[in-house]
Amino acid sequence: MIKTDIIDHIVRELINAERERLEVNKFVDEFPELDMELAYEVQERLIETKCKEGNAKVTGRKLGLTSRAKQEMMGVHEPTYGVLLDNMQLFEGEKISLEPLIHPKIEPEIAFIFNKEVKGPIVTVTDILAATAYIAPAMEIIDSRYRNFKFTLPDVVADNSSSSRYLISDRLTPVSDIDIRLMGMVFKKNGEIVTTSAGASVMGHPARAVAWMVNRLVKKGQSIKPGEVVLSGALSEAFSIESGDHFSVSFDRIGSVEASFTN
Ligand code: 0L1
Ligand code: MG
Image 1: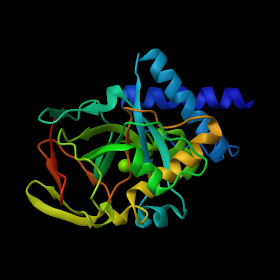
Image 2: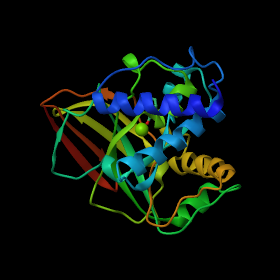
Image 3: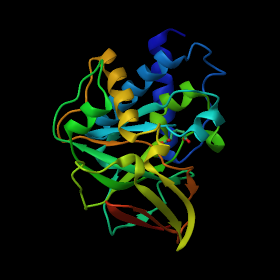
Image 4: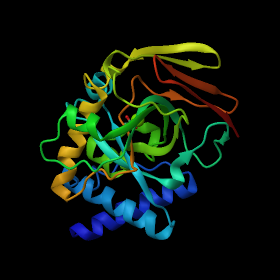
């Protein structure tokens, strides 16, 4: 198959899997030419198609595989990135239906909200912080379209880094005077602590993960735009979600956010 046909085929399969709540097998076995470069091309086409066919709009971006634990599990040394759309956004207080999801998991994150454009290729932690209006507690719901969350790195990049939904607290905090690395985090499931962590678990500094992404986006002529949000990567492993579950993430200094799930 020629390259454009491979891209079209994978995009169709992934969109169909999400729409029909089906798991698909990873694509690298069928298409050995699916390397990281081609995978990001698939991701771009996937997002373009979702925007066109689903009338969706880009609201920001996300980092994936930022924790050493997840990278070691995949045998990689770098994170991935993906795109956030307006139809992925959830709001505080709403009951979240699991009905449209395949096998969702939830993870605690720190959201960055930008009020200036940030463009690579040599963006640093300081540049990211200078362009950040606010940070906020957040949770990401990931929902890989692959069977049993089994994939290679190019597969997961093609699948928009397992993006599904995201929830950001309404409480926004200016980033100045906060050392995000030292911000403690407590993650609870149904009232019990399931994990604790700190900002530094995301590549030493969550803004470093964001800078890494911005410096790669420039190769595609892309940047973070004012008003966009970036989920900077999970501070822990992800937890499976079942109907009736209630999760909360609380951070030192910036507050908390909660999510309740139903059928
Ligand atoms: O946001 C994430 O860290 C998910 C990245 C993709 C890997 C996964 O689905 O676990
Ligand atoms: Mg995530």
